[in-house]
Image 1 (cartoon, protein in one colour):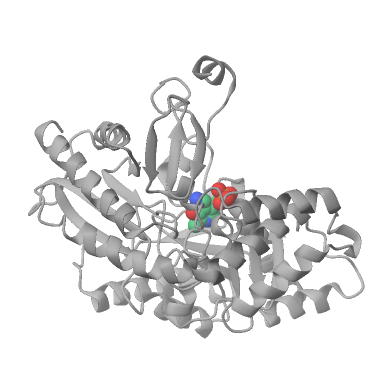
Image 2 (cartoon, rainbow, N blue to C red):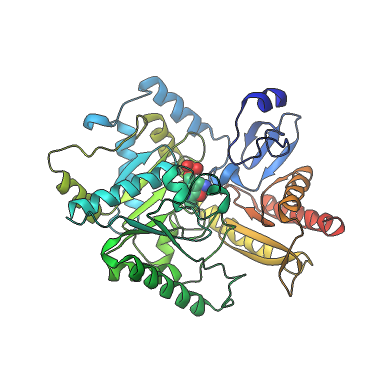
Amino acid sequence: LIELDRAHLVHPVASWRGHEASGARMLVKASGATVTDAEGKELLDGFAGLWCVNAGYGYESVVEAAAQQMRDLPYATGYFSLGSEPAARLAARLAEHAPGDLNHVYFTLGGSDAVDSTVRFARYYWHSKGQPQRDQFISVANGYHGSSTVGAGLTALPLFHAGFGMPLDWQHKISSHYAYRNPVGRDPQAIIDVSVAELRAKIAELGPERVAAFYVEPIQGSGGVLVPPKGWIAAMHAVCREHGILFVADEVITGFGRTGPIFACIEEGIVPDMMTTAKGLTSGYVPMGAVFLSDGVFNTIADGAGAAAVGHGYTYSAHPVSAAVGLAVLDLYEGGLFDNGIAMGQRLMAGLQSLADHPLVGDVRGRGMLAAVELVVDKDKKTPLPAAAAAATRVFDRAWQNGLVVRAFAQGVIGYAPPLCCSESEIDAIVARTRKVLDLTLDDP
Ligand code: PMP
């Protein structure tokens, strides 16, 4: 299998020449929070696949919903105003959960095309308002918004730019709130003040009448699980409001109970103009993403288009099987998984905090079932591990050997996003196995 994989399968975000990161391991089965590899080894999935299997693996109700939908109607295009029952029902249930007036749902295949869709919708919104010159977009350093050309440009991680001609010339960044390594220190108000000033300066530089939209992740995921200070999101939202700039919350990771509430925006007390989701929407059983549009954005675009079609869409938009899975997953969330996730999130954060005195741990951060431990060799100086990328690979390997799947970020950060179905003993095992990995790494970094 591994030979076939290396010869023919092109992997995302992996070395195309080194073996380690590319197809060196095969998973064959999964149930609950446990995955099994081709050699029969069982591991706790501390990262829910790629922060997406929020419900957990192996739910028969989800499998049955997909199978039944495939029997009844495997495909119906959303084009030409056609529809399907599961898509309509899922959109309605999601709108009920969404904050404020985010009442309109546009289904995509995943997160990248959800982000792309918001860029298209923002442009069409300003076109409809007679302000087509609003064509500049701002996002935040350390952010991740997908791997499409548009999403990778809004992303601010060097790996996604170098060699790809990114970012595009209408895509701008302000610096991150990254508290642990912030030049102004950890003081929340100081971090907020700097970001507000930077956003204001960037808007002034581009011209307020030129800025279409501002993008944030409520917690930056791929940048290393960076949690903004309380009030940071609301402060950035307020600056956008001053200039009528559209505020887009990218909840592809934070959505569907990952941080506690169904959407992280709810806890921040803001209602974005558009919100992107994916991952936990179908919990990884099938692909799907969704853009939520406010009444204002939806109606402006609809009125602007009038009787003409709005020319944007995918063959698999609102796929009936994905929608049926979305409904079955939502039943699981509402039936107790969201509540369990909140309880287990507290246990996970407390458990990881108990590692804070380990000599290698510089920072422990997160919210709910989304967390990270940042490794350093000198706590006072916050010195990163030497050859951090290679050290991260060793951390990943050691975790694997000890029955734990985590994300080991190249900068020496261990990321956690376990399924919401985890039991207390599984959360405790994630923490205990992490301590073992840290001890092994201390002996041999
Ligand atoms: N936005 C965010 C915040 C993400 O974390 C991701 C994926 N990790 C995406 C967008 C892109 O989603 P996808 O990989 O489903 O295209």
